[in-house]
Image: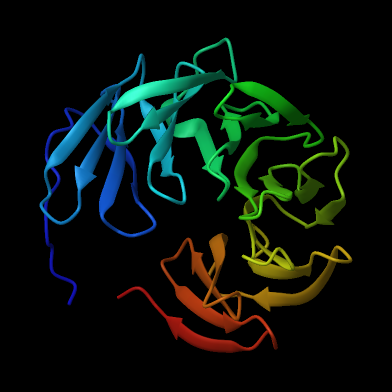
Length: 267
């Protein structure tokens, strides 16, 4: 356990992202060298190199593993055929170049509804990735958007921002459904698989669980002593919340009771 199976070598510069396909058979990586690469996870072999005009900061597979969507510092997201290694569609989010470290892309389980976020602009865009049609733009954050989430069923979107809020939208509407207020910057916002709950990570040393039916906070998880909470996610069918703090502490909480179950401090 914990041993390296393969070292994926081939990028010429910093690797900015790496994601598995849903079945674990393939990996996509993005790099500041202007490429994304597809890999066979069983052999470690590179199957395709996907050329871009700038660094690739984010990439994700479709649920069935047949497509991958990438986000590039040139302001475009691109949909690729995994078997052929060819670009099927380009989505122009921005007409200006941005840092590849500041691009985000998400893909719904339907394989075609995509979300993009580029640079320090608060604009979150929803696309039909197969046709390239822009479906919606969410513009209500007033600060930098650090994180975005597209619910697996494609019905809800979450954003986390420096404006001390997370926001929840229904994907077909332009005005947010809920504004989840915090006392400091919000670094991540994640939606449970069944879209019944959300969890946020905040600079005020808390993570919070929210009821998506009412927009109310059900539990405030106190990380006092461990510093800023950089990330909080659901796991085990949203029964648990896993959170990491800037001091390296990792915690597991019961999302049903708000009780701390395990705490591991950096050695």
